[in-house]
Image (tube, rainbow, N blue to C red; front, side, top):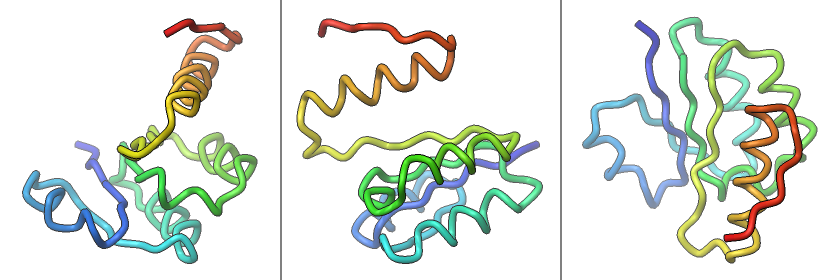
Amino acid sequence: MKRIVIMTPADAEFGFKLTGVSHYVAGEEDAESMIRKIVQEPDTGLLVIDEQLIKALPEDKLKEIEKSWRGVLVVLPSPERPEAGIEDYAVRLIRRAIGYHVRLRI
């Protein structure tokens, strides 16, 4: 069975450890190397990354990682995210799932 891995900044460390899933703590500067390390592990099936960690990571690198990995990569939105950003993220997820650009009115 594949495992679930959650990667967050240090401020969310203890909350996710209570869930029993594998948890990694990273900063923006080492997020990319940590992501690449986690997706290399054969038993990882789902990687959930806190949005704060991928701010410095270019979107093309994130897409490259997603395409080369057989697992599922999910970005966990930050609570302070502006409304327009939430719509952009939702549209991007839908486009990835169905392969078509959709306009949403929320």
